[in-house]
Amino acid sequence: MRDPAQQRFDALFGPEFGHGKGFDLSRLHRTLRTLDAPHEKLAPVIHVAGTNGKGSAIAFMQAIAAAAGLRTHAFTKPHLFRFAERFSVAGAPAPDAKLAAAAEQIAAIDPGLTQFDAQVAAAFLLFSATPADLVLIETGMGGRTDSTNVLPAPAATIITPIGLDHRDALGETLAAIAAHKAGILKPGTPAILARQAEDARAVLEAEAARVGAPLYRQGFEWDAFASLGRLVVQTETRALDLPLPALHGAHQLDNAGLACVALMAAMPQIADEALAEGVVRAAWPGRLQPLTRG
Image (cartoon, rainbow, N blue to C red; front, side, top):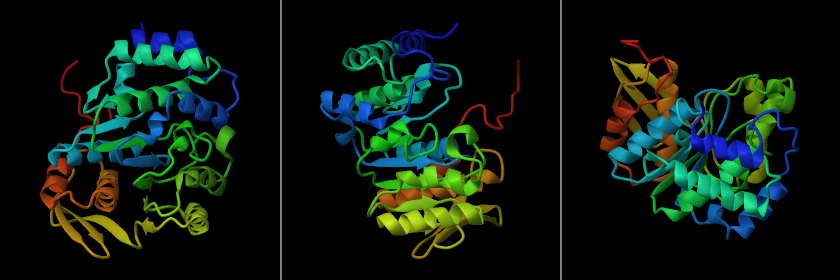
């Protein structure tokens, strides 16, 4: 049986998938204006799109920020056990009662929103009501027309490796899908890119040039790799010698590197010691996690 917060969102806005509603960001914009623009009253935001590694990159950033003594909000999906896991307020899942209250406030304005629109609006409401130092926002699907892309001016954007995902909505080729993901790039906002296939990278580079987003591409302006049992994260101006990530899999070297480079761009006051501590403290349950019982 699903939890009460999930049931309330389902009852008010219909199912998250297969709802038959069109995607129209103008409705979400109107709703947010009626709510007094909570998305414009957030701490510095890092906006994360891509196909693989979004959640892991956010988990690393959460752990690094915590090690630096920063309060962080995060909106991620999907959840593992409870719907409230998607809405991390200062490091803890939002209370079900507050989620339900936010859903009802949003439905009173526009019950025709998609459920994901409503989830995004609820996240912004909850995050704007609680002081924080950093906000981490994961896209749901794509980027350009994603509900999270109402954010006006993030402190940084991340695009993780792009693969063939949601082809029915985003297109059949890497270039077409990359064009959607590239929609989160903003003028003057540092864009940190994971290593990409050439077709996807060309699209991202062209869009960054068009909007004026400074690019930090893995394999060009930065890289991350294992050396002598350590994680090395190298940029054009800085070299980090860090412990290997706690999360399992060689791909987590890249995700940890993404997190470090994004935080160095958005919050340069974070010390190397916090970066090192966060890399080994990050937890992202259910992803290559050894199960020792049950």
